[in-house]
Amino acid sequence: TYMQAIGVTLFLNALIPIGNSYLRCFKHVKEPLIIIIISNVINVILNALFIFVFKYGVLGAALATIISRVINFVLIMIVIKKRIIIPKNQEMIKKREVLGMIMKIGIPSALENALYNIGIIIITYFLNQMDPNGLNMTVRSYASQISSFAYAITLALTSTNILFVGWMIGRKEYDKCFKLTNKVTLVGLASAIVVSALAAIYSCTSEAEWLR
Image (tube, rainbow, N blue to C red; front, side, top):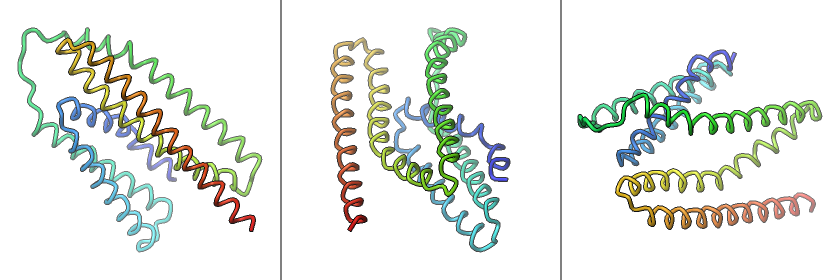
């Protein structure tokens, strides 16, 4: 039931990041953050309402997610329409050329993500087979959420670096692109190591307390 309901709005999972990236390209970086905060708050409130008040169960969780996604998408479209004005320029690259460049870079990246998700599905299947009680999946879920903090930092740095590199290339400041990318790489690596170390220390401490 949950997957059937969520499947109706899965296309929004693709459109929402595109809208967010579009806003960031025009230096509107705060708006996507504000919109996602609003949609997440709405999602939490609706989950509590549908699950605990109306007793819809899994269907209620699905409905809350669907409504929050739709609101997220609508807000992004409103902000794009109001904030971004594209000037008419005769020297703009033709749409076919732009699409070709996007596909050349985007298809390998999409395949990479698809293979990663397929691997996660296979691992999840084997974990469920080995542990009918779901303990392994619970542990993996917590570990995944903790590791996502390190991923979130590097993802934020990478997204910012992409924007600045694009602007610098437009101004033909190639040396600054190289220096900025190196700095971002080092900061991202350091932050990932720190978060991983903190997670390892926390897990060791928790395990020691549990053994006592």
